[in-house]
Image 1 (cartoon, rainbow, N blue to C red):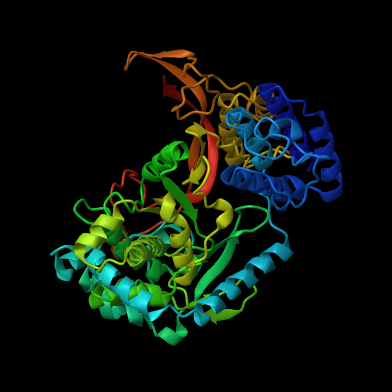
Image 2: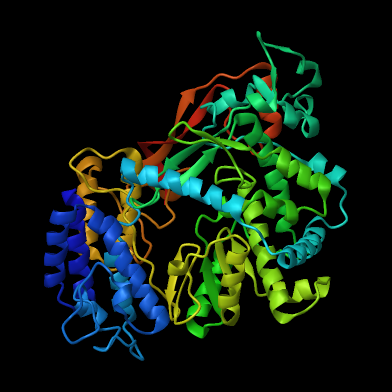
Length: 599
């Protein structure tokens, strides 16, 4: 797509101006290789240059193996591509300078990563490769055996950690707190919106612990077989619908694998998952402040300070959720059999792949399950604490678990651990059945990345990512919103010529957009002074107002009545829409409407 090449040239020129480097040869190289290799050079090959560059920053020197797709200068250990930028960071022998240019580091990453996450469909061959990888991970889980000593220590650590999470509360009190709800997306049955509350079937295995009469209907009087002309089917395990594995855009190299759960299973997963996440983050537990689900700020700030003092390492895991096996989950919850039974009752054991093949799952759950995130976070936390205890030769006691868990921080598959112990921890995690992504794991040097933030020596070096390309076709409302955000990020990053090009493209379809504050609801351009234009005065609130395009959710007719309507009203908190029983938001779709906003 020519637009990606044009934008890449703009980024190169802007970065060259900002750093005082001549990008003319780099522009020629990009143009030539895009002609030969297509967009994959920008979306797949260039990001590998950034990975090699980051490894060189971590190791303090450049080697040819870090840049396999790029040539080197004669008699120097510097790559020819982006050589004018790289020589501001490394000397001609490929050794990191004492005071490298942070601006050059930021520019190299911006040039290489600008189009890594662009939302374009993967090729069919790459999707097939992703499916084979999914099956390979399943096979590795079946064949992996955890050392008995490690497993025994892990179970003891899990007993102590889980005891601190649950405290002295009885499981009966936790059961009374369960409030199921539906997520915003689709389900394995392709049911959406209000129709999710009109259950036509309920798995038999759920009915033992989570009876339909208590969770699937609003009143026990309505739990009989006849519900508005159709009968409720109690589905036996052999007839249950498997989870639907699908691919969603992540990068053009590899799509993200999501498992879409059946509606009733996902409904109850939300209840147990929300309860368990709240207990994990509850003050007083060993995990409070160390396992986080809502805020990424803890890990991000630790990554920033670690890029200065080197105290912490950031570890990233490959296929993190898919490598948490049933055995891991069983040992994590072994000390509370009733809770373990809840988690395994709500686990889907079969999956239908995009090819149509149905397989039995050895993993606990893939992304898409509401129990995936809390389970994987607790497994990673307990595994690292177990490693630290075994490495120091201490006994597993509440005191040792408390002491050696204070320097462990988990957010999803982003882990922060003491840098001097990181190599041992990485080896332990792999012996435990997980896989460390060493390309994104940093425990030496001054580069760190965690939870979407990138730091070098305390400076933010995160690039601006393009999510939508600029094309000749009219962009969707979602693409316009994304491109406005991208243009504002480019402006704040100092890439003004590239920002101007994106702005001109957007205003071809929207007309001239106003200047708006950073937190404004309307579409517009941000400034460093966080100012806002206005074209009216609100008499009621005695404030300036502005008429501008506002992203608005699209609602569709979605009637719900009777017991189903009562069930939704009782289970959904913070219902502000008065017509939620008649119309629902179509998830992922937006419209742009001109409205007045206060400024």
